Length: 214
Image 1 (spheres, rainbow, N blue to C red):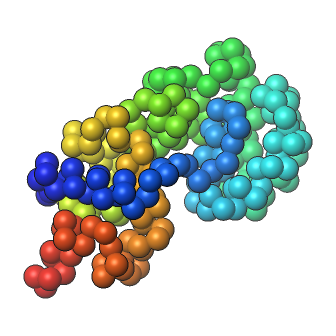
Image 2 (image 1 turned 180 degrees about the vertical axis):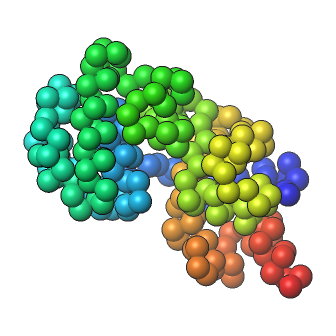
Image 3 (image 1 turned 30 degrees about the horizontal axis):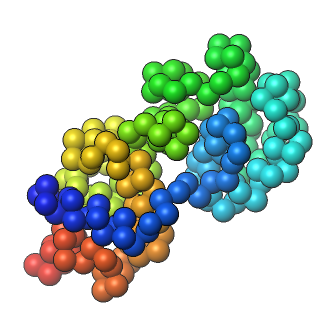
């Protein structure tokens, strides 16, 4: 595990390396981000960004999504994979948002996870990016990098990782930190072969230490 000083150093270096900590999914409205994250499950953000412009043009309002034929939505999101369940969740979610939340995406974890197709990862992303609340988005990059760096110790359960990271990350930095993990995971700390030789965290990373000892 990393010391508080090392955690601070990791945060600072990632801030310097990736000053723009933004979600790569494109959206204009809060519900669009909610739907885009649902589409991104086991699909790349790049693919989702290719799909959503036509989807949002065809269904330009939450009301139009709520009234949509699920099979028509399926046609627009087909290339994202698992299109039937994703289309069904999007339409049902739109209906619930209108009926139970006045068409507004809720701003609490409790309410968000009750929406169709929404889990803690999606809820945290909404809380962090839309409402700018402390949030820890645990995706595959976060799981891999937090374990490699030594921020958590051999954990795979997203809920447990979220709890551990909340305990060591400054709340006001937690959401942006998770975005930076995604950027770093894509650019340097690859799942198959991390590029430790060019990594800005080379001397504060637990993975590098273990590799040196091996």
